[in-house]
Length: 405
Image 1 (spheres, rainbow, N blue to C red):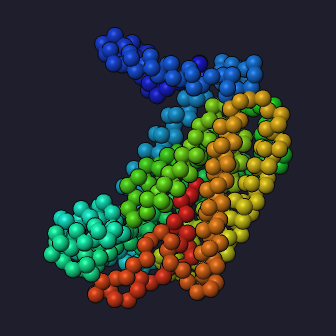
Image 2: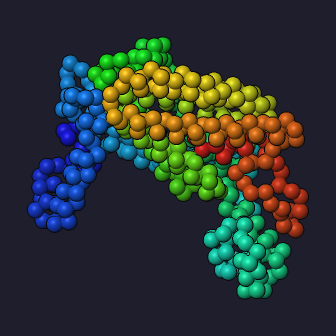
């Protein structure tokens, strides 16, 4: 397939590939395997409308089309740059000084006494080991059950990010969403397929790709790659939270890559627009919570709920998905539409799960006046901290919501 190539094709010159092929038997075998799998996966009769081959999708002077090189190379390079900027410039020289000015403490709790037995127990089972495992630990360590449970709680608190770190992390994500969100709404909102959604599929796949859409796609995909890389080592998040976020990123990345390859880019821009905007008041609200700005926090909360309902609960299912299912799918003969449907429905399910979570938190806030961060396990503190953990307000509770996507 001429239009879809691998990282080997993109990053290595023909002479280098020829040298490796001649001098490395494994490289030849891997190359042959890749070609076989790639040809089977990227079948034109599956991904493209009947009678259209990949060669017809290549970029030309008369009609600029998505270049598959671009979606493989540039987002990954930019995502690495984002991670480096996050770690060495934005966090230490912008977000952390801003958190200091806001008066947010970066003090971490004191660690529990070193105990290899309990450290092993914590690494395997966290703060919720079974009764038999706790009993084993008490016998091996010589501690009482209460002392073991207290040790596990203190070790867990030590692993959690501080409000200082949460503020800085939210600030970086807010910067990314502001850049992509403002750019998207300023450049994509005037496109004809926004006012007439039928333009996303009429004339497909021969839709010209302009520079504005190219940059919007590349920037959006770069952020999702960077967020995925940083999520892997992000401390303090539960396994379920990480799984939801990784699943959300996976769906989004696959949707963007596949839609780029098949030139469903117009539909992809609408998905990005709908999903980007709610994260801006959410992340702003989180920063206000960590900084103690209660008035701004409440304003951001109200704005977030309004934007979420409009974009995630109305526009995505009843505008975009409705047009795809009832207008486009019945007249489309492309077999790959089933792949896009599965991924888009997957995003819809995640949005529904988050909406239920948000409604539950709001109801709890109305009844009790405050809510706990649904990410964290509810636990009593040790003797030095006999008071219960201060309940956080709605914004940090929504910190469990994976998408900043």
